[in-house]
Image (cartoon, rainbow, N blue to C red; front, side, top):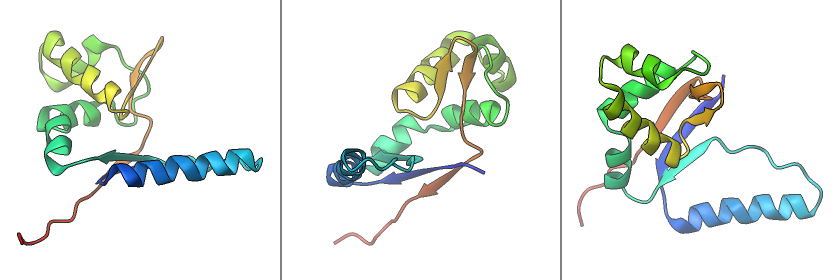
Length: 119
């Protein structure tokens, strides 16, 4: 089962992952795929992963490529609104678009969010 880990992190976290993969490639090692999506703030994550967009992801999960119209039908919304959500999800790297359609290439999502007391 392939899980997409979604978390909040700093640019330095993303940079470190990229640099490690680069070093592995230079050494001739095959980098392990990182199934991770990092948002800079909770607000960024919440804006991109709205309840309506998570409904789109749920409709895609385990289905293989689907057309935009089929996704809209499954979530009970109009195509224009779903198109906007799908575009945002593609842009953040959560879902894929190919000639065959739109797909969610994972089995599940794990949200990793720490909430601390205010200083």
